[in-house]
Image (cartoon, rainbow over all chains, first blue to last red):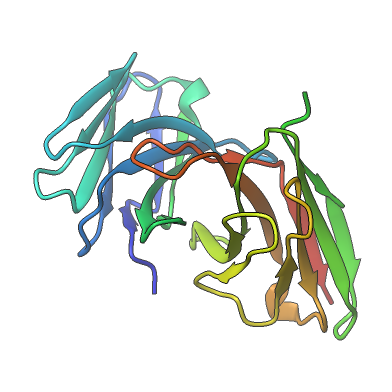
Length: 110
Length: 114
C-alpha cells in the first residue's frame, strides 16, 4: 500500500504557465521531502519541510507543508522547459524507512 | 568522488536465472536502501540497511535478498528472476536519520526479465 499519493500523475503545460502538484497521505509525518528526477538519473533532493504550515521557496518553486503534516504541495511559477521531470515526495515511515510517493511527471513545452 | 555507484547498469535475464546488483558508496553513510521504480508507482522500498551487518524488509521484499557485509557495499540478489521483477532499481544512501536526512541516489540499474 502506497502511503503517499501524488496528483496529478501527468501534467503537460506550456512554458510560462503556473502549476501545482500535490502529495497527500492519511498519516502524519515529522518531515516531508521533494525530489526531482530526470531521465536516466536518480532523484535529487529539492527541499525538506519540517514544520506544519511551513512554506519554503526555491526560486520559482514554492513548497508548503500542510498544517496537520499529512500533505504537501509544490507550486511552480512561470514553468520553463528545464522544469521537466518526475517530481517525487518522500517521508520517513518509522525511524529509518524513507517512502516515496507515486510521482508526478511534468512536461513543459517551449 | 563517485558518490553512489550501481553495477551493472543494464541486464537482461531469463526467467529463473539469478543475479546480484551491487551498490557501492564512498560517502561513509550508515543507511543504504534498495528501491524499484515502475511506471505510475514512484519508488517502492525493497530492503534497507541501517549499518554494516544489518538488513530489514521494506514495502516489497518478496523475491529479493540483500547483504551488507561491508559498510560501503549493499548487495541486492534475485535468486530466481520473474518477469514481474522487470524494473529499474535504485540504490540510495543517507547519513544520520532525522528531520532533514537527504538521500543520495545512484543512476539506476535497468533489469529486464524475459
